[in-house]
Image (cartoon, rainbow, N blue to C red):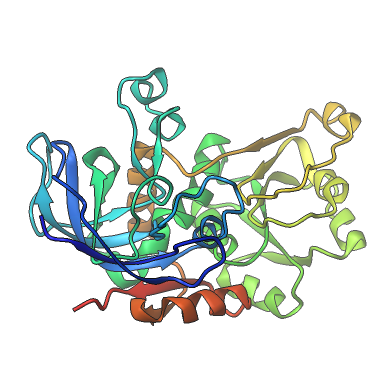
Length: 338
C-alpha cells in the first residue's frame, strides 16, 4: 500500500509539517477517499494544541472532508469508486453497542473521532468506516460543502433534537463558523431568528445572513429586553457569557442548547430554570442518519457555508488567519499534493 502524504502536528502548539505514513491494509469495512477539499475548524486547532487533553501525536487534523472514493473494503455496501463523498467528526464506531443499534452511533462509547487516534483529512487520502462516509448531493458545491460535515451537522441536529417548530423563535449566540450556519438553517426551518454577537460590525452581517433581529451579546440591557421570548437559544461560542441574562431570554419550556466547547463551568440559578420549566442541554455532531438528513435539507434549501479558500500547502497561514479572527466564516483547504 502506498504511503499517504499529509500535514501533521508533531507536538502541541507546533506548526504543521509535511508527514508521510503507511496506512496499512484497507479494512473490510473501510473506504479510502482521495481528498479534494477539507475544512479548517476551531476543533482542529483545539486538538492541535491539546486543549482537551485527548490528542495523539503525530496528529493529522482535518475532519470536514470532501473527496472521491478510490478504494472499497470487501464488506462495503452501496458505494462506488469515483463517487464524491464527505467525512465528518467521526470515522468509526463499534456498530454493536446499544447506542449504535438505536441509531445514536455518535454516542457510541468506542466512537473514533477522525482526528483523535485516527489520521484526518489534511492529507491526500483518508480512510473511514463506510457507515461514516456520506454521499454528497450533486447540487451542493463540493468546494464549499466540507464545513457542513462538522459545523453544519453541529447546528442542524439541535433543531431536530429539540423538536423545533417552524413557528418557534430561535436565538443564535455567536456569528462565526458555527453561528452563521445556524442562522441559515434556522431561517430555512421557518423560524424567527435573533442573532447575538459581541461585534458591532457583525450586527448587519447577521441580518444579511437571514436573522430577523441582531443584538449585542455584551449589552445586558438589550438581552434582558428579550426576556421570555426565545423557544431555543443555541450557543455556538466557546467563551464565558452573561448566562443569567441569556437564560432570562427563554420562554416557558425554553431550551438553552450548547454546541460551543465552553471550558469554564456555567453558573445556573435553579429558580431561573424551575419557575419557567426551562432546560439546558448540549450535543456533539450527530448520527449518520442525522448527517444524511442535514445534507438533504441543505441541498433542498441551497444552504452552504460562506467560505474562504487556502491551498493545503498554506495550512499554517490558514490557521493564523483563523486564530486572528479574520475568517468569514469558514476556511476550506484545497488539496494540492500533486
